[in-house]
Image 1 (cartoon, rainbow, N blue to C red):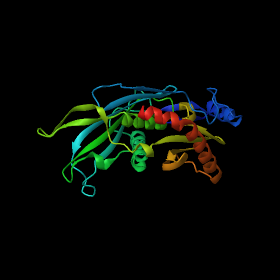
Image 2 (cartoon, one colour):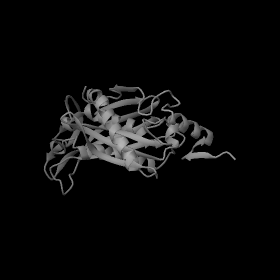
Image 3 (tube, rainbow, N blue to C red):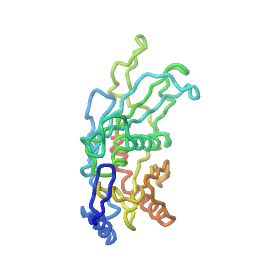
Image 4 (cartoon, one colour):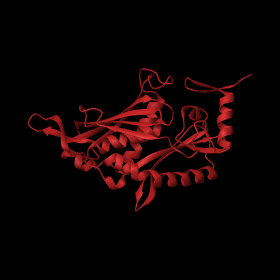
Length: 279
């Protein structure tokens, strides 16, 4: 009897799973890439003029839209002189049959949390510079992520889209007399600590191979995934956040392979990503 692999509503014949694993065992993938190879990355900025910034990012056919807007808020009691930050993710059925209309599911919640953690823990946004009046009024930064098409590896695509949207975001024009925001300043960006920029790479264990930038089919047969956010430390990568997903166990050998691969890919990708984020 033929078995199937299920991931939400995504169904794959067991024969296809075996084919994917067999190819990877030979150092190949069904789309012609090597196990460690990323798809072509495409970035489009200035997608919307009604927000602080909005960008569209593609890895192959996986496509994400990310926008940034700012609002006035009351600071948290334990950080009265700091702004606040929030990330949300919307996974719409137009992106994948796995996603349903309605309340955010576990996938969208996890996606938002992992991206939020990578940005927050790196200190990328200068929260203190977002204070308007200590203890009373600050700016709150929102990053809104919308999946347009899910062909695998939404985590990395959405993470990069969020970074670029923040890097291109404009500061609000605060109308103190009426206590409201009157549009955005075309010449002034939001306060960022550019030297701590970090970006995320997600690696999956498929068969006996560690695979970067998985396709939809590869993602469906993954044993585990590990997302690593890495920034610059005087020309060398530094880990700023890490998140494991799926049920499989990471062995010492797997972890060593992932860390070496992450370091290698960071060295190749970081200069271009820095350019995409800051222009």
